[in-house]
Image (cartoon, rainbow, N blue to C red; front, side):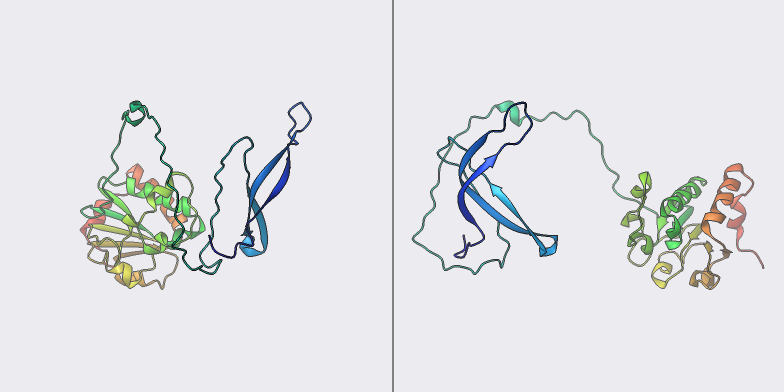
Length: 259
């Protein structure tokens, strides 16, 4: 322990037991109580932790922790030696036996490459992140071979996602310069501005469809189809049309429209 331990002191104390146990509270005298003040609320307040001795015992270990820099480093005393006390504890062999009752293996990762359709969700989900991702999952499920990816903006955001939606917010789904590069037949960019870091991860897609409220968004310049609108208003009827068969995505695979 450091040489200056003024904040750690030992004294006698009377500890009261006011618990309502149906009998008068008892008082027991404890010796050798270690008081350990510690800062709380960023140092504006202090609380004291008591390491209380136990009566009727010849030895009671007590200890405290000290953060680096709290005291000056004392000079080493090489004459002091610690005492090693050996104690053998009989242990039952059954304690070391482990029985595996069930097991499961996690997926090795999320591979967004090799799919016909990739739906990518961007920061446009900000008004309602949970609903936004749910709509992205529903749109992805409309296709036989599709996967859902995310822009870096979603990965690094501080959005609060509720329920099962949070399992989709992983770096493995990031598309872009620091994520995966995809080349699907159809790439649907939902609420993505189209920064160059994202573009390098998807601009080799055959058909790029983007949905954005900003008509001046960069992604419009390299999209084959651009839908100006709020994803929360555009996706529900699109999902309904795809699920009902009213819209056939195969027509989009033939190439962009002339106008």
